[in-house]
Image (cartoon, rainbow, N blue to C red; front, side):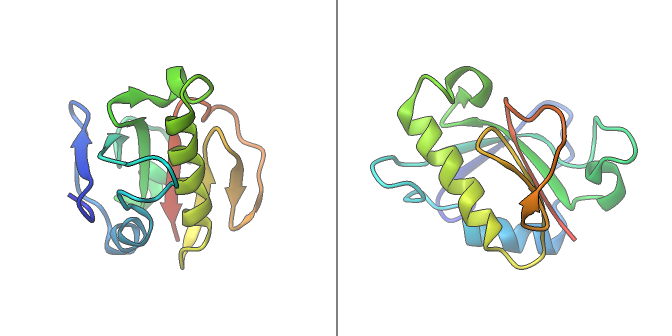
Length: 132
């Protein structure tokens, strides 16, 4: 749990988060993150596994996380169709931008690295957060 929001981990996901990433998530994750929507669960599909160099998942050992579901709904399927999922995803990405040490903030809403637009493929179906 983070601030009352249940965190679920995908099969085989090593659920060990580095302190700076956990601190950032504690600042970001909240049941009331988005006006008009309640965040109850997040699904972490990757922490420091299932990726190849130079991914931050591999470099940082717990400094990156992928979130692929919001309230049990896959971001890739529901971001454009479900206004609640969109509000929550957008709010999570906006709030992460304010975090100290935020490095990568890639998702369907925008893709930023160190607060600036960054061209990177993918991330329409999940949020990727990493810290320095």
